[in-house]
Image: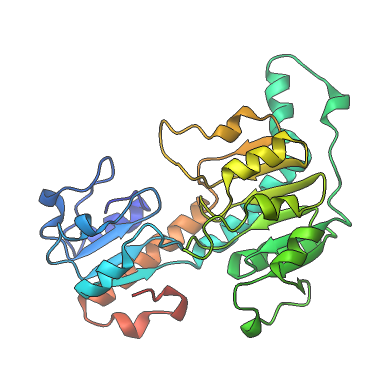
Length: 309
């Protein structure tokens, strides 16, 4: 384990497997050289060099959805299976996204900070109602669709787009659009795409400029999908009214985003998927996958979204 995961799941694995924990620093050769399975989350890079410290490695389990922090090409060349567990965290990320929307549009975080220092400037803390607003979703897949359902329940008009639109059948509460129409029509834009070569910088200066004056941007996708320099400029200029990010181009202790300089921004440390129930479900599925791999039955238990390499 090179990332913290559900403790009950770790205890269960220890009943039948040797488990080594290395979560406080980059995993060393001493830890990895005898390991057959590597479990990781976001916050750690599984590079070619790290993979090669584990000559017996046959399986990498990504305890979550994203896999941009894994050298998939080298894993494939080594014949190492890579699987992810995307399902359990989807509800948690969607709910957290909507929490960010509310915190941002109603200035909840700023209001809390002011009351804590004895200031009560009520006229300065007015916000907008969500009912009747357009919620634009970039990446209306599993998580984005859940966000859209929440938006529709609040009386929002939801428009979304996906990368491969020809294969997409949107649910009745989401109007299908392309990226341009989602950007131009959204009062509130949420971003839910993986980080790939195609999506890095997807929401840049031009895209932000095409949004409506006074719009909001919320991202629980991956750091790098939204260009933070361009976002800073759009907020600082007054073109956008606010932004909320749970994911950042640079993450980890000691990293302070430049966006923290602005009062109309809500920043959280990549915790959207950290609902207790979701982490417990991820841990349970992790145990199932590892036990199946040990019994040479991995393919028989894999669901299609879990297959990576």
